[in-house]
Length: 59
Image (cartoon, rainbow, N blue to C red; front, side, top):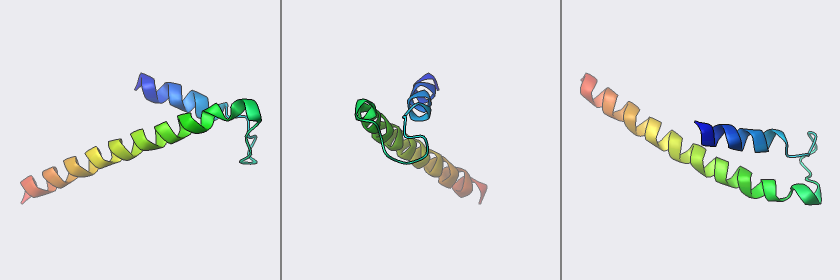
């Protein structure tokens, strides 16, 4: 959870101010966002797998 909090902090301070355009000094946050996206995909995969297991056991 701490890792997610750190990534969210970076996301929230990206500097785009809603424009989607990053200041040059903020471009490193792009990599942080990509890393965060990958971690979320992995987490979602785990959740889906667990849901499938629970549904299978239910029957």
